[in-house]
Length: 115
Image (cartoon, rainbow, N blue to C red; front, side):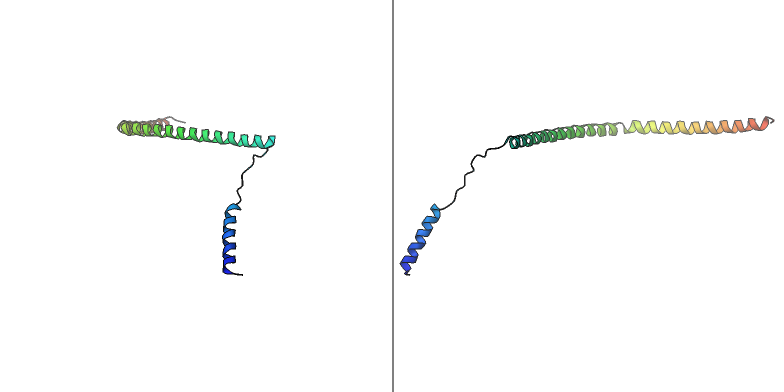
């Protein structure tokens, strides 16, 4: 074998390599009715999931606004709530004192009543 012959074959193989490249083109497949329904069902489920995700995001954003408004309302009414709690505490102490006084008086009356 000579150098020219091997060089010629090498060039010829390279030239054929370009022409021998396999290109695959997908032929349209004949689908059965079940395959078509399955693909359609998957598409419908995907659309429904996307709509639900959008609705969840919308609800979460609305809840975030509501929580921010409630927090703002709570902070603005903190003084009023504190005053009301203090008043309730005072009323509870007064009721406790009155109850103790009534117990003492009932005990004194029961001591004086003969059995």
